[in-house]
Length: 504
Image (cartoon, rainbow, N blue to C red; front, side):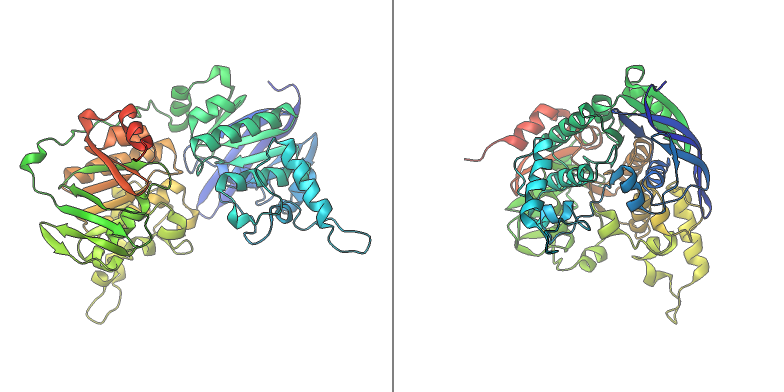
């Protein structure tokens, strides 16, 4: 298929303890093209990218780059060969300037051996100009840059290394729509300059927009490599999950609110940091209440305030009509609440601990005998029960949770709260960064929980997700609750009108 191949992947296989991450992967990447790699979490995308960028070694198979077999001992070796990877979790030094980050480890020196800062800033500025970026000051500290600006800086760093192939892992996962458009224009500009881009994304509409060629991986195996003209989103999804997939969630939506009694009432709530201002709403038993709005609207802060993770300045929280005091997350847990945070790796998981230990954290006291010793048989049985119930893909409950895919990590956190029989579950972007198949399973869990009477507040930035899952939808704007609408009245236009409406 390829006329001018920059990278050839042949029979790549990689094993981890108890898991075959990649099995006999074969495909080629053309020079000056955008080659997308898609697949569910656990499909092997990140493992393959880590092999190409020198983080891992393949156990079998070969990689040829520009016609030469390569075996990188470390990422620096891959960079010197012309392959640079931009990870989903950016790795820039926060307290160094933009220019210092770009030339880290190879700062230009003058004749006296001192750092030539004028040249460093000038060279950084020239690289930024090459991408058409004029709003980043080379002298700015990275900690003062936005996420999208950090992404651009990573690209500049790769260009400074004269990378001929750029690997981008979920580059738009934390960007706004305007920032995404700008980044995709940068990728297109690199294509015009002859730089090859290996583009990993769960956002299939992006893939269809930017890619020339698309490779689908499933369960560590190569399923298909096709030109974009031979592919559409439905075909891609079917290849990824290995079955026909209907992404629309079908639920029986709640009605007759006037006859129901609220489980949770929030009255005039404001937080200490001013991110939440005078918010009031009710949550009913078994309801899935959507929470949306632009990034920075105060959505996460609202959930954290309810859960006791953020200090409240004013307002009341009532459960079953009675005022409750929630000054700490343990108070919320005692009342039957659970919080699934957006940053599962930072806020939700103990990454170096096993699946079992991550699951039982909240109910640990109930699994101890009278002497305070953990009853291992009970913990094993309970953990195994939830692995089966939530279809968590793991070799065993003793697997280190960091080795699981994003979707299975998320289900591990869900299992933790379900063990505590919650009345209310606060979910902050529960499907962020997970694949289409894992999303479907999270949707099923949400629907099943609502049927058993568990009330859910679902914070999501994905409009189709909110519109198809939620009984009612509330929209926040600059810390204020702008509107609440029932499912029957909600549509994208109405939600966006609440989101973008100007105050005053």
